[in-house]
Image (cartoon, rainbow over all chains, first blue to last red; front, side, top):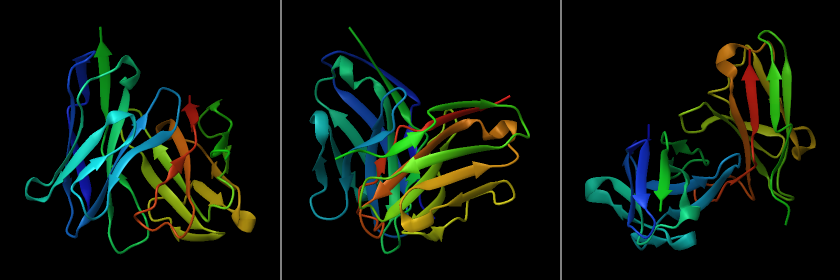
Length: 114
Length: 116
């Protein structure tokens, strides 16, 4: 079975500061990894995904994440936070070789302050 | 291209009542998912359809929850009777093809259910 752990249910950064949201996964087979963002009263929107190939993945809105197999991590970063980045962020994993079934982490709420 | 549509957006019911949620996926999307998102948790898959057939309903509480996707397009999720612990946001998502694990799932805005 696969799972993801998101460290820190709440993260607060100043506008312009680095954003770092942590995600560690557990999977017995090579995983596919995803980051989704959820704005208030909206559904989830895909930020980026890792399937195969390059381990540094670039997504929308200036976000990127790096797949590190040795650390079983897939942390999400953005060099400079913007007020509009305030939202809930979910890391998710799916298992290769089977029909798509996403297992989500518990989420990290990002607060951006002036 | 229109996104995933869900209705109603909000619903308040009393325990032991029944409730139904509706989802219309993106046009042409073969695979449809229903998720339950309890406050403070990530979404949990309840059921996955491919066209009008069920692919995975292993986490659906079948004693009270049911879902159907007649004609392989829109879908209905029903709870009967509802319990307090069913209070959650119910999210619908869809993917274009077979729901392969590289595919992006597109989510609707969700239905927020409060059971009193």
